[in-house]
Length: 116
Image 1 (cartoon, rainbow, N blue to C red):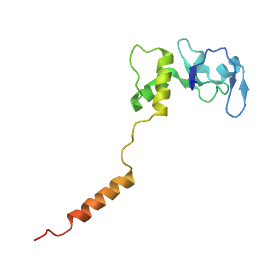
Image 2: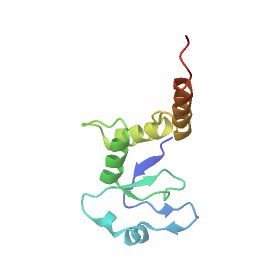
Image 3: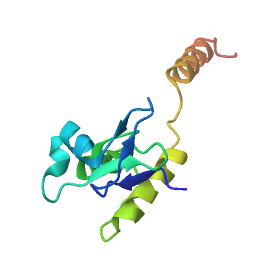
């Protein structure tokens, strides 16, 4: 099941807190959503007011983070790629603690006297 969708500007919204908004109330809450050509990303029902993001910004941030988004993808394909990225994030690499431990181990091994 999809996590995100583009708001059609007619569906009512239910937020995670349980607050309910008509489409008009939601658009009044987020006036930018009424602008022509602007798409709002919301979460999938039944709690569809889990986010309210400008589609283009939402996509640009996820693409910069590494989501596999390519030109020519439909809006639905882009949202699916973002969901896949969130479900399967890239390996962040070693933690600060792991890097510190490796550096200390290197220093300890490097300080051992050479064998004669």
